[in-house]
Length: 256
Ligand SMILES: [Zn+2]
Image (cartoon, rainbow, N blue to C red; front, side, top):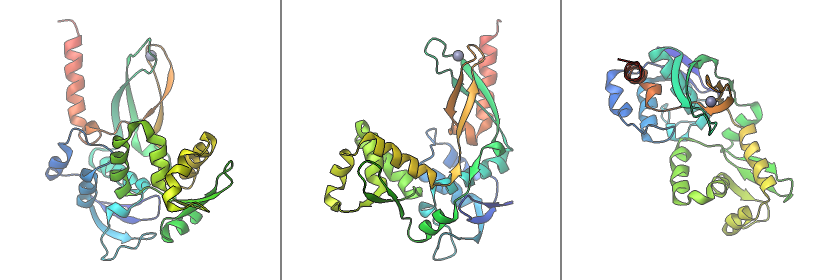
């Protein structure tokens, strides 16, 4: 068991994963979203010590209401407690003329963690409402930080309209706009300049908390340094299966 404090201040005791969690982990498409993550968090979160900035009615964490940054931080700590901080993964080189396999090893405790600022904490307590002014439109907008429930809903919306990823994120996260009727919100967002949209996405990040999962890796073939997102798949929670795959790959690629 270990005591952890999430980026928002939410504090509790967690345990490592047990064999009984295998049903959750058996899902090959285990992603940052989805009910499996909630199940895993609920199973391994043993005791809540400090709910602040959340207010959970019965002393139990409602993971659907927890900020995305806290959820991922807690998952990361559960992973570290279970297997240790070493994470080995492979990605392919982004250079179209190379595409070599890049094997990378990472100490998960070294990922930068950003705490929720006092100002953001107050906005979360006051109902997860943040405010900013768009530079081009000159209007004040209110928006929200992503929670567990949003993690499930937003990808569904995006799958429904994959050609409108940006506008669905903005429409989903913007709560209201000064002087714009709720019915006209979507149209207002479609009419935003891309500079305003970019500004808004930056604002979402600026006031949020969480773990920075963007890494820089270097290709062993062409030496291109490139940014990748921390792979968060089955190998993250079952590193043994990756070990087996690596061993198999080595034995088939080596001359007999
Ligand atoms: Zn390369």
